[in-house]
Length: 316
Image (tube, rainbow, N blue to C red; front, side, top):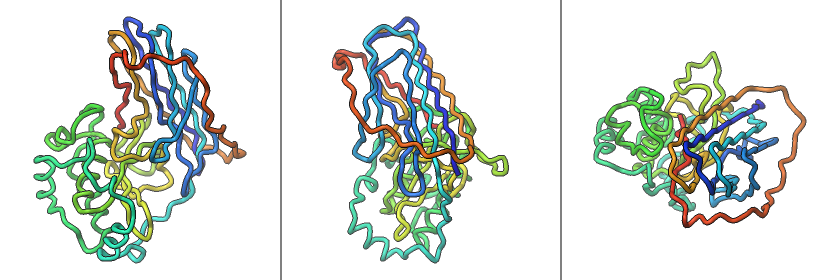
């Protein structure tokens, strides 16, 4: 399937601010069953955009706007091809002894340790006891059961938590958004000594499938290491094993590694953030090569003197 993605982010400030510095993670990854055919990023006011890959292979664009600005608009457009992803079968999954042996031989420690948003708390331990969290007959059965349990235990309520909410907020209220459910599942899976990571991206909605997560927003889910299949994706928001409707943008230990936007500015202002996302299927286009990852010189901004502000948008 080929998708056309448009992601518009608008920051409005009153009064105007200055010397904004920002990084953006919006370019879909090219690996496995997914290939980014084209990507375009526009920033208004105009800015020189630089790009690099972080330690997990995510593409990061960054820029600075040294002048005064009352509004910053970021427009990202992508065309992505995602091939069908076969659902994992019990016959393909290994047993626990083979699983532990392969994890011990690999370099998965970052996805096994607690992280900023996916860590143990008293409330999480209570929830784990409620679920009778333990290794089931096979690793795959364990993950499928936990994916379904989180889906059933929580209501999906947009804006019920904040971008930096700890998992306890969703655990106490039993409601949240995809970001919260992903963090809860990651924390629980890691307690079972299973590598698990956070995925930021988009979900193409299908009228035939009753997805809880809405259109017009970014999405988040998890991937767990499941030899010999590799990293297998689970979507606890919608009780799905991720398919070719899930478009991967960035991977991380949790949301802190992969916010779509993050930055700082100088000044004191009330700010308003608006985000619009559209994902649609398209006829097969001619493949377009991505521009090489070049670095363009831009005017340096004195970041050390800036008042810190998180230009982050919660994943719904």
